[in-house]
Amino acid sequence: MEDLTSRMTQVLTQNQTQTHTTNNDSSAAAQIGIKLDGSNYPLWSQIVEMYISGKDKLGYINGDLPQPLSTDPGFRKWRTENAIVKGWLINSMDTSLIGNFIRFPTAKMVWDSIAITYFDGSDTSQVYDLKRQVTKVKQAGGSIEKYYNDLQRLWREIDFRHPNPMVCPIDIQKYNSIIQEDRVYVFLDGLDDRLDKIRSDVLQLQPFPTVEQAYAHVRREDIRQAVMITGAENNSGAVMASKGVNIGKQPL
Image (cartoon, rainbow, N blue to C red; front, top):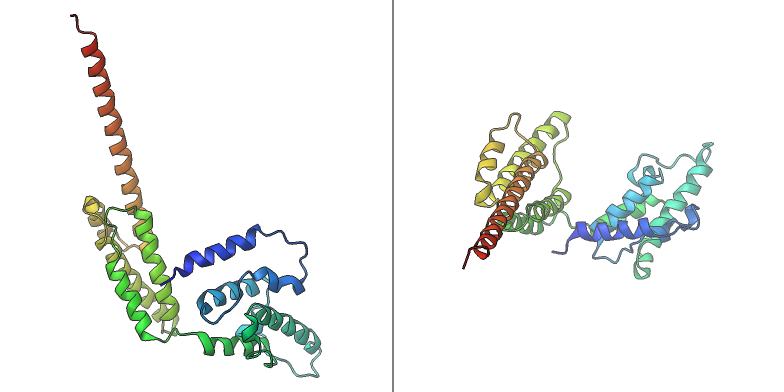
């Protein structure tokens, strides 16, 4: 599966390095930096939602700003801003797709229709495949950073496709805590054997850490071990060099 996070980072980096000659909303679609092509909905939706939120117009796609009555004093302003947001959505998709969504009167209807058409998050086979990939990820002698980032990338995909089903705030928190605990176990289990000691230490922490906190603890130990190994190698090299000099000075 293509790395959604890395592609998202590339798009954001491209946006940040572009030179914008205007701040006018009419040029906003060109600044989004990605076109919906039917296969990239997860990436597209996150980038576009982030952009619209940054323009303080998220309410036009999430339902927080519903269409007022035509007699309402704020109707003209709403109609104008709705058209702007709808324009961002339409102009950020491939031209072959525009005809499927251009006739919807509101930005929210466009947004919802795109989601219904392209969001495959309910596909349990994809969630299964992602979880299967998680079980196969191990440090295997590689860097702790790459190992952790590989896990996080898969977990973010799982969260996107299989979100927290709870409604009550307390239940949401409990569910998230259970997920975090399971992920700490997975992260620790895949570490190299040389990190056995810190693995045991993390399991004894109270309160039980999040996976981010567990990673921070393990990373510090990983850095400490690297420093110790480098220091030992330098000392060994210095000793060998010193012996070589002394041998060279022995009388004939």
